[in-house]
Image 1 (spheres, rainbow, N blue to C red):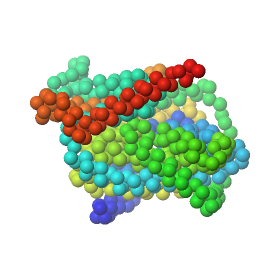
Image 2 (cartoon, rainbow, N blue to C red):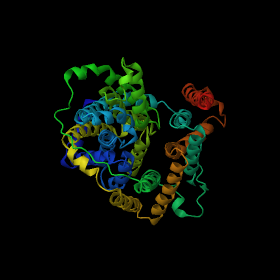
Image 3 (cartoon, rainbow, N blue to C red):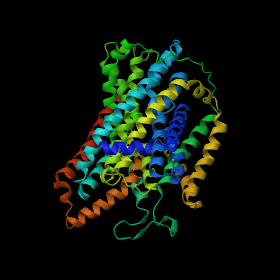
Length: 498
């Protein structure tokens, strides 16, 4: 492990890559701080740029954007009472009231510090859990990978959305789009409509840009007409604004929130948008004074920000060890790996060991840059919140089109991002979650290929998928998660009527 750490540090500590990490972290914070511009959009926008960089430099840039984007949402959550990203929704509950009471500086200090702590704790978990899990995953065959793919999708459908029907529809639609192109085993053309551009299926990058960035731009543009300007009070930070005593008082809250964030981050497709709210509710339940939550106490900010940023390292664990994205941003990162011809999974730790540890080091460096950039650059970020959306959105839209075209020099890809942008906007309008779609698109080839390989090995006997211990366990868990969600939804109906 130590030689790999040394190689990782040698790869990261160059002027080019350190500059990219600094740039990515700051830009990520900006995208997180401005409501409507999420970490997902930041990574989608910069994905094409990584094509011209090496694998280490490109992935380091994307990881920095991820870390900065998740943390940056706390700035607008506290100053404007508008969460910059879904990861900062629960930060508003106590950050807003603290700002109103004149404790905005303290709220920002607490949020910034515990964002850093949550990120660092999750990176430590990633460093120790991922290699061990990768070793276990080396024993997996086609039966196990098929079962994991199905389990991941059912978990997303049943836990990440309010409506299981809409979630299932989204995931199955993603699976359907993944079948376009030449079949993985017998090379038969499917659903190409006579277009040679579709022989290789839909390129993941234009799909990601369209589904998340373009649809988000359309949604935010729709709200610009009704947008009201909110004046922001400039706050002066002196240190982090809290005492050593308060730090020790929040010790258990911090550890518990980090565990919740990392654990939820590991579950495919859920991520920081859920973990911050879950952590906040747990902190409120466990508190001796739950009535104070929502009135402006640091407990709520500690729980929300620690959990949200802990999800970053947690979401990277299934990505690196199994090739399954933990959330929407790691789905983008998977696209970054594919651009450089790298397939994440257990073999990554053997074939690309130095790269993996370079990612670990890049995340640590980005976390420290995030801490100091937010602490000393709050005034700059506050001014950026005043940029009119009617200026910002067209610039981002043009960059999305240029990035999609530049990847393969095909006008067809521009059409793809328009198509999936409109599809994503339709998802938003009808309340259909986007995450199951993109995970279904990514897991589709993995599930289909391993299903067919497994059937070939077992002479078309599907019972082998159920009798093999690991595969049977994951398929059982998949069925259990669906049944559990159906039961919960059935119980909730009478309560909703009351």
